[in-house]
Length: 450
Image (cartoon, rainbow, N blue to C red; front, side, top):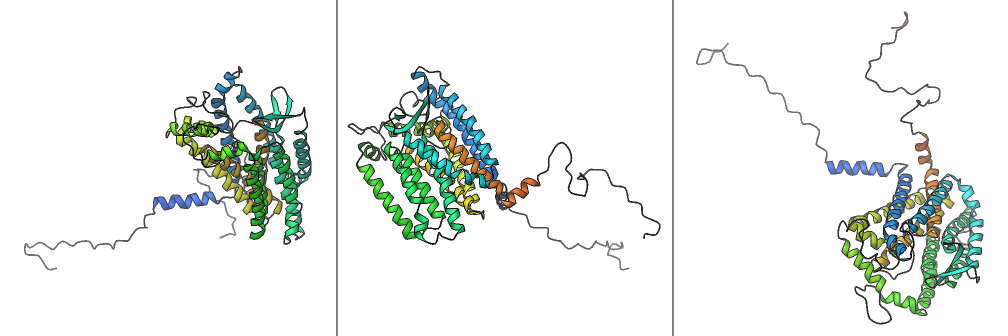
């Protein structure tokens, strides 16, 4: 062995091992996006969005109704919780309707279409009978039920048009009649115009706009040609323009678009301007729950049509964005249910309900923001009013039932395992084996087995 200059044998160095590159690091943001997409594409996503979103909107609406209505109730020499208790009673009845609708089979929903339509038409006609119909804020659209309870039948007309229109279009699609324009329009459009006529007899144009939006949504889902769709839309626009032009009250509301301060003269824009004041004074996180200033007689209808403004004042931008996010999630879930089903009735009904709720929310919030004329429609599931809450919660129950009827969702619900209690038996394989830290003992073999 050769020696070094010092006489010592050279030190043998260990050979360097080749550096093996490790797995590339994953981008945390990309991983989060991938997981979010997987969770978003799960079969029960729409089911949980509809159930959770509607529940959160309703609960938050109860809180805001209690906060926004206290001063109004005291000014009317009523207990401070008067409107809240009535809304809570309506929410309890609506929860029963939601549960019943979510458990009904689709064929029972279709069977209820004609009775609900007939009942809505009769009640809307009774509104015009002297001694039965009651006028509120200039609109003859209410029926007195005795005491302080009143009913607005036009709210049930929305539900009637959705169910009856979906059943009608589904039957015509099964017979392959929707390729002809006359079968697509008749009798859907004449029946919708009959409901619109009964509503406009009372002067409630806001509800008429929502009903028109439902009609257009059904025609769009039925695959109406563009020229036919544009034709019906043009006729509705001309009729709407005539109704607005011939009414000084509607012209005054149109003149208040974008107003930032009250004006002198016949058009004062008081409600629209103070709605903007409430939103502007809320800031990012609001002045605190119950600390609104505008509800002290400055903002009319603070607990009904303009409850979104009080929400912005007390909960700030964070609260209003949360409400918008909940409605966006509810709308997305409804579109997803309508787009993933093979049943034409489910597609039309889910699309009609989604159009109804989203259009009404956009019109109400747009009016509060000063972007649209004040139409006098409540915020769905949020504003005070039992007549609006009951049919809306029944419609939410329809969406939940349709989301459960999806084959993938039904299978996912059937495969859910209970976390507590008895272990579930899977066929002939015996009880489910739970993973433990104990090592399994080897199985004894027979003498002839290798």
